[in-house]
Amino acid sequence: MADSPDQSEITLKGIPASEGIAYGRAFVFTQSDVEVPHYQVDAEKRIDEVARFDHALVLTRQQIAKIQAEVEENIGPEEARIFDAHLMVLEDQALITETIREFETTGLNIETCFNKISSRYIKAFSEIDDEYLRERASDIRDVAQRVLQNLLGQSDTSLSKLAGERIVVANDISPSDSAGLDRSTALAVVTDSGSRTSHAVIVARSMKVPAIVGMRDLTQRVRNGDWAIVDGYEGTVILNPTDSTLVRYGKIQEQKRNLEQQLMGANREPAVTLDGAKVALMANIEKVDEIRLVQDFNAEGVGLFRTEYLYLDSSRIPTEAEQTLAYRQVAAALAPNPVIIRTLDLGGDKPMAGNPHLFPKENNPFMGFRAIRFCLEHTDIFKDQLRAILAASAHGNIRLMYPMISGTEELARANALLDECKAELKARGTPFNAKLTVGTMIEIPSAAVTSDILAEKCGFFSIGTNDLIQYLLAIDRVNDRIAHLYEPTHPAVVRTLRQIIDAAHKKKINVSVCGEMAGDPVLVPLLLGLGVDALSMTPPLIPAVRFLIRGMKLGAAKKLADKALKLSDPKAIYALCAEFYREHMRLR
Ligand code: PEP
Ligand code: MG
Image (cartoon, rainbow, N blue to C red; front, side, top):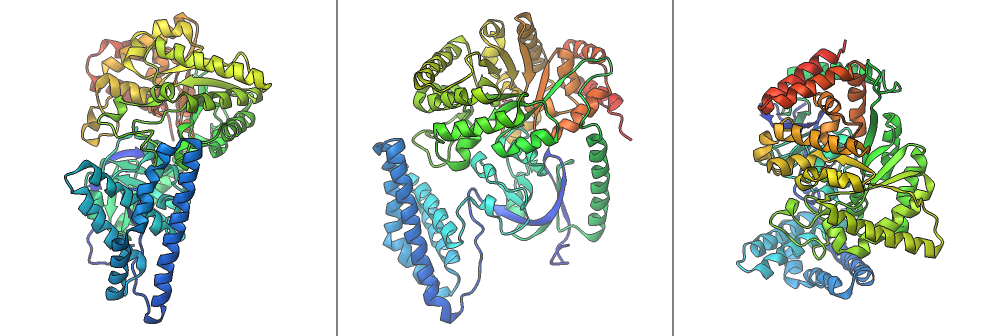
């Protein structure tokens, strides 16, 4: 219930991105910022407070020096020099003495004082009309965050260490911040920008955390500690809810729980249509500990392992041995079911934090240095991963998949590196599956158009509709301003899907969909009608899709797809799918 009864209830609308309802206090998260407490320090404790500050500075210096040494050893001296600038920030006497002066004047806790002074520096530097000096702002920001984390005894990003259960409100959440989200404290995620397919949202969905994006200016309207309801079904945030609203939401929550129970009732049943067609329902995972989700939701293996999260989680390149262990754990736990390991898809909206030397800033990151393009340039990083996947393939049913392939040349170059890795493992005497199936994602229009040629050279296709739609319709998938134009039922999308599926089937290879479309029960009949063999989705979405499949006929879905292919209006195609869904999703 709201703390201040005089505050009136406000209802705000955004784009629903992950289902569920949450109620709790808000934490306004500014990119990678820690939650800074604000309190008065007793006079007799003031010496200790300054000592605490000194200690945090020393600790921060040690941490940065350690990272620098690791980078020097693993990447090179040039890259390690980047951290000299960070160490210089810590030596900056002006920053330190001004913080202490602020503390002596106000008597406020040292975190508040340091945050105030460092923010002033960051602002001043970021406004300078000189690129070099402007970049120092981000050095100060990084170091300041680290000092604050050390003062607060936090070792990781603040999202992994929320002060308690919180509704996280942010302008945006980077994939590396989202990697630190903790289900036990993050009640919901609400962002000013973003879209249903941004990676932070995908992570929230897999954690069953309600999420809303595209709230525009919520971070300006909400304060830390405000009470709020987040309705991830409708995309509504209610600030300072009244008692009657809380009662109403309590009832809605109960209805939703009943619905979930009904869906879970068929969880152990096979995904077979009424006319006997079997559909493989697989899981999209980002982390090794999601094995449990794959099992709980009875997925038939993993259709997409987004391995880049192993890199995003730690902000450093995992070693070959660490990767082998991770892939092997997943494969062994889920055998004999297949595990499709997608090679690294960093870049785009998933740059690695703290690695500007690997991911320089780009004007069009989604069209830039991403995924296979990055791997074919950083072959040392890529080959470490390929060897790790190969070594793990001796222990389960692993398949390998490349992201963002645009045509046969990239595929051939990636496969040539894979062959080199096989030879290296052979020379080492490390066992691997010599017949490892290799497939590719189809998510770039050029790959879709040439899918007949690619199908000759691939073991399978997996259609990444998140990117395919963004590139086909020229709609940046994380831009909330144009999110309404991101239409999976656009005729261009429907026709392209048909083309890819036909090309795959002509060459007798399997085709699955692993973009978010695969987990949307309204769109699933269209995909099945177009001929998709398997669907891979965030595990919590499986029960609704399974329930729907068990209540429909593939023959009817084929008719739906044929009708959709004849229509020219995305909204009309969507309406057709929605009608089919209503008729076949028979819930009590
Ligand atoms: C896709 O593009 O549909 C996909 C599954 O890959 P990602 O969302 O990781 O880009
Ligand atoms: Mg993609």
